[in-house]
Amino acid sequence: MRFRRPGAAPAADDVADPARGIELRGVGHRYGERVVLDGVDLTFREARVGVIGANGSGKSTLARLLNGLVVPSEGRVLVDGLDTRTQVRAVRRRVGFVFQDPDAQIVHPTVAEDVAYGLENQGVPPDERAARVAEVLARYGLAGHADHPAHLLSGGQKQLLAIAGVLVMRPARIVFDEPTTLLDLVNARRVAELIAGLDQQVVVVTHQLDLLDGFDRVLVVDGGRVVEDAAPGPAVAAYRALMAVR
Ligand SMILES: Nc1ncnc2c1ncn2[C@@H]1O[C@H](COP(=O)(O)OP(=O)(O)OP(=O)(O)O)[C@@H](O)[C@H]1O
Image (cartoon, rainbow, N blue to C red; front, side):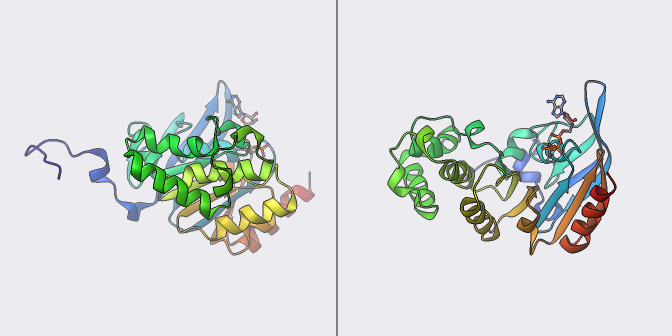
């Protein structure tokens, strides 16, 4: 039970409103002088959102804005009403992020330690931690690898481990930045099936267009702007048309 002094400011999570989803308001981003996103106004409430576009169009930057890995040079990004600029810790608890390269995410010597790391950071007690780690490793076929050195896993297993490390934190939303790019067809299909089965809201940046089958909404980014925002069929057609004239 938590007590609050009358009139005291509420804790960040107390004011979060999950019905608001993820909002980008008047967002622009520059790296130095270079403008990489401009005039982006979006609200994501759908369960499955895809982001596609040419290399360098700004997709990863857009993805990184969603959990505060990048703070916009202009405008605001709100997650359930929480501002990524001022409430980044609360935002990160709500939005997990899976990188293209799992080596960027795997930091601990063994598989189980790696998955436990975030929970430890959040002060989850050891018994609960062990149970949650065991559950998530079993779910993603890594139970037999719990004590193995993480860096010796195959590329596909590493990606599953990186995803397990995010899922064990139970975020309400997960952003995947090109999660299948480094994987062979079998592992890419496994990751696609895993994504399809998640209860969370999912935003996926990808060049693998069939990953978007069944998605609710797909954005096409070009030159730092969202140039199409539609169902997968029309969005992919717009992207193909755009690429055909280059
Ligand atoms: N940290 C950074 N510092 C400077 N420039 C950057 C940085 N990150 C990205 N950029 C530049 O911003 C632009 C957009 O990059 P971003 O990674 O968002 O594109 P992308 O659409 O995800 O590309 P890809 O499909 O190749 O992964 C690119 O020109 C890139 O070189």
